[in-house]
Image (cartoon, rainbow, N blue to C red; front, top):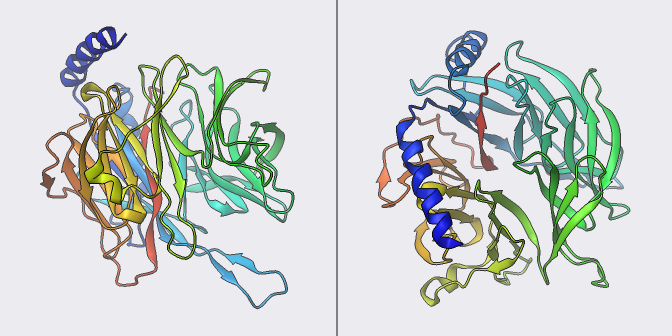
Amino acid sequence: MKKDLSNHLSRRKVLFEAKKKISLALVLSISKPLLAFEKLSKLVLKKNTKDNNSSFNAVGFGRKPSYNYNRPQPELIFHTSEIVLITNQQKYYSIKVSFLPHSIVQNLKKPNILTIVPKWGHKAVQYNLFTKKITSTCVLEKYSLFFGHGFYNPDGNSLYLSEHNESTSESYISQWKLDASTAKRIKNIKTGGLRVHDCQLSLDGKYIIAANSSHSLDSKIKPSLAWIDIKTNKIETQLYFETFGPTHFYQTTDGYFIYGGGASLPGGEKLEAILGVVTPEKKIVPLAVPQEMKSYFYGEALSLIANEPNNIAYASLPSSDSVFAFNYLTGKFIKRLNIKAAQGLSLSDDRSILMVSSVENHSELYNFNSVSFEQLPLTIAPKKLNEYEYNWGAHIFKLKYLEI
């Protein structure tokens, strides 16, 4: 099997190198826009109508929510953040939102439409890049919280979001219709687990894939990865984990799933992170961390991405100031990068540059050669802030413009 996959990857690598690509970046900042956003967004779509592989990056930037303890029931306070579109000419354009985005979801049928999703938030917003307006808002009732991730269905006419209820401890994926200013909930889809965080559409468009990251107090409900038929909403496959389950995962075009998770408990106890691969045959293969890296392998394996032509995957572990690189076919670890509070990860379109976001040092961005790991100068450097409480969101998302 590995030999066939290697041949397949080798052929695909040639195709990757043969394609010309355009790279843009979408990040959050609180900087002033330089030019008219509408002109740029139309230009971006025009450039990309003939190139289905061109893309840009998306990541949150702003203040994390805080608690108001002066009320009988403490409530979360959300602060204004901004999304900024940065071109390779170092020009950037802002979009204000009222919370720190955890993820940014693109409607692939209407690529100028994005939904911006918080974690621990009561609302998610749909945004039109052309009109520069919020077109619809998903609003939750008390105790219900959006849990960070989502996706549009293959037709682009409804949105799925991970959701958790703090009062009932129920978790599910909610489906929404966003054709009005206030979005309408269509239904809740059970995932067979608790604290569903990452959720994605399978690459073939047939399944909802959900990361159930937690277990019940009596341990009768275990953490799991679940494949749910998008038409019937029935769970077809469920893979179980023990103490901690995956919070995030990355799908490769070869049918592999790279998963990561874990937790850091109050009091400084360092719990081992989880990181591994699910094979195309749906077999869980935890990675064996080499002895020289074990002292850094704790907390949550947060962001995941794969450089498929080279079979290299990357995982950020903010608690240990680490980015690990490993071969996802063999499980062999290649390198540990020491980056203070590393969070988001992204690859350039030609897979040559690995971008890493850090919440320290006034929210830095770093570029590395994705194979040699040599640090490279940033071609795009958003303005730094002097206020320490401003952070990048947890992830950098690769968004693609498809033919319209």
